[in-house]
Amino acid sequence: MKETALVIMAAGIGSRYGKGIKQLAKVGPCGEIIMDYSIHDALEAGFDKVIFIIRKDIEEEFRAVIGDRIARHAKVEYAFQDLHDLPVGYTVPEGRTKPWGTAQAVLCAKHLIDCPFIVINADDFYGADGFRKIHDYLVNDMDESAEVLDMCMAGFILGNTLSDNGTVARGVCRADETTGELISVTETYEIGRRDGGIFGKDKAGNTVSLEEGSRVSMNMWGLPARILDVLEEGFPTFLDSLEPGDIKSEYLLPNIIDQLIKAGKARVKLLETSGKWYGVTYAEDRAYVEEAMRRMTEEGIYKERLFG
Figure (tube, rainbow, N blue to C red):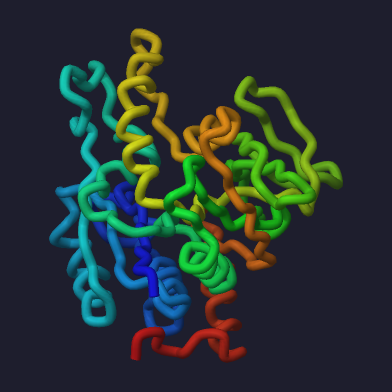
């Protein structure tokens, strides 16, 4: 069977582990963190190895908290996202302190990725259905030799991805009703329920009304290894586009994929999933996530000890 990899973007984890680090919050009945559930679901779906994208300064602590434990159950590799990891001839603008976003994060793992892969966020719970559907697509349906890049994405129902404790940002998707292929992904901000509906803001800050059943991206993509070449080629173009003094813009994977679709250089199959998202976006979310994990354990969806 075709080899596949799970790539986890975890460079945003802080350098100090404890109550304040949302990605490392213990939410499972035996102290599991959200990443444990994603890795468990990915391995159960058939993914062969795990690639963690982290910062070099947290490597020792990260290995101790999760990496070494997962290495007993799957092949584990590490890539390191660095603010200073730029193409030749480019330097970090004065005042910039954050890395360059999700597309640069994935690009940092280029030397480790030689097969189709799924990429996810470290601090989102996606549910098993999305991992199964993307793995099946990568193994059975993806045409790696196609001239147009062949990809897929798990499309979540917007209403299943909101927090009761504040607003969230989501990539709102539009797909062809006949082919199920993605037409566009529009980054939308400050999404939340109010006045009997769901509202957010577009890039310009205008209020937009959203449908409960809209499909949204949660950064759960199934990608061919060839996309790494595209990201590498596009990074200098992104850097050249920055206005003087811009120290916040990011090289984002959804934006790059959206551009590829519109340029006719990629096709993305939207794989609908009814799975419910959980995440610790706000401190108040933790109790809700703990209750959800406890309930799924009692229902037999997960074993009490995920990895025995």
